[in-house]
Image 1 (tube, rainbow, N blue to C red):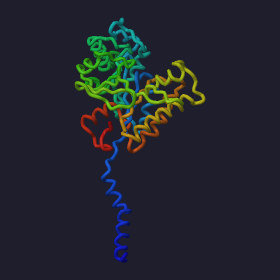
Image 2: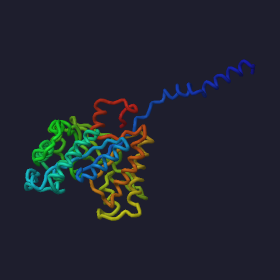
Image 3: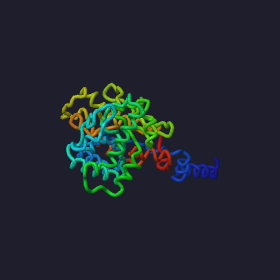
Length: 335
């Protein structure tokens, strides 16, 4: 081989290994979408857990969805305003707010969370099982939820209603999750008629992108592998609570419940993150089950994954908005 040929081959080899060439090759590889993680809370009752969740969001950049039960906007004096389908007035499966001062504190937390970019959605009112409700029953419950939220300041004779509150209550409550995830066949039509954009009451065998039917986007909480045997469990704190302690409160002094939950969260995340990046959903309650094990696991999980540059911990409403008008973040919204 001539010296001239050797020099030509050497130059080509250097070009192939150069950063410029590598970048050019990389440009031909489609970028993966950002991994979407949607974290939500049901009931949204204790003030200290509003504050704790908002602090977690502030430190991780996450945005949450709060599914609010409207009975927590009624005091003992005003509880009679609410009447669920088939129930006497003033009845609720989850109680009411203990005082009008507590109602005001919760209303203030709702307004702060909204200002910080979180989503307020509906969990109906009295946490009754509506699986067998008629369309009229659902319409009644949905109307109660929207009316009580809209008029909460006036109903409880509270001062300080923020400017824009009523507009927020009328136009910004886009999502719903049925108590007990018990929807029935009449819920979707009632939600669509009431102007909701999505329902998050479904359950799926694993992480799945939402489907859409008649203008209503439908989300499903996934079942994820958990524990030494990898048996699937719904990605919700209550279901872990039942799995770990039969639904009876136990201490977590040794951290076993927390560690098992955290391992399950990470395993589910890692599987999607390393594959097609299907959106991953987790559901929690404003209840510190098993000594707060599942909230502690959530906080550790969020601090790890929500701070990554290619992970978006967003609300359901954010995800719906991206699907309707895709924001070119990480290529698309995944799923």
